[in-house]
Image (tube, one colour):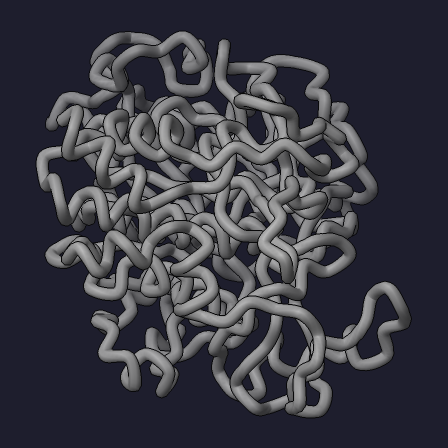
Length: 494
């Protein structure tokens, strides 16, 4: 198989591998062969109960553990030998160059199933002997769409925004909250690196449910990176009465090894809002159709939307991800507000027209995001001594990549990225759903887009380099979310 940016196939696969299993669809077209960019419904890709049961039994008899499920398929975990038993192929590791944390490019290990009867699509395997399973899709690596600042003295002089006050004011959430619209009764699910019980949340009286850990052997009360803990504070800045349900999809090192599993688990619990501050990265512009292994993933996300869940994905920090392009998803881009409250497109955030889905622009709407090189912008609570709190790369930084001013183990750091924008938009959606519980995802997206504050200055990330202009544009979509105006819109129209 010829792959872009392929570097090596010599690495051994990990001991525990996560994957998605697609049972044979009742419509007769395999998920990996479907033109999901033209799909208007996910129903043809549902499986008959008998077929799904047989598929689950085959997976379990091969030594795989089922970790989550939906109407379309289910996720599994197990050692490489179990995948060999199921497919007859071998799991190999390939090092591919992609954009990851901090907007930097590095080689990342991707897994593939190879063998005489295996498809050439990256990460996709077929099952020998039987027709209940149409595809086994190994999970691609994802990275958090944020930046990791490092420790410095506690007296922070760098310009930044505080939570909840600054964020609430700039996105127009204050008037909505004073009007009694704070997300009461709405559960916001967040799939991320974990959730630490930070005193910040208790002090403000925020409702945080115990985290659900989807990686076997991990502690649901831990967040080794700090990303999930910090970014979740953005939800409450906008919707202080909402309930947060965290899902930890990271391993003991904080790597997002089970993002798909976390998403399926969260979807099965049917929250009002499902926010995701992570994604993959592909070549831009793409040289071909949507990769086969992403097609099942697109349909799983579409299925969540069609179930009435408001799904939010971060647009990316220079990333070109499939997730924010899925029809029905609210993709969160970035706008920077300076000390004088002048607005401009964040040059840290992605913005583009989807090459696969007609008339779809990323972002749908924007939250508050800092500027390059590190988007150190929001003072966020994190576990003391976590990766973000003590990242050494920032300690020796030189201008313009300067330290954030916090200590290495004080439980606070300056960071943002579109990882912050996504939970801000999720909070805005919770406010609208709390005021109008029957709103559909499309109505929420319409209200946010129609009332956003227009941004007419700056450019998005240089990888795309689109300019903010009067009216909707490719840098910021319709602009910065305005929660109070969105609330008025839904009350007047729905």
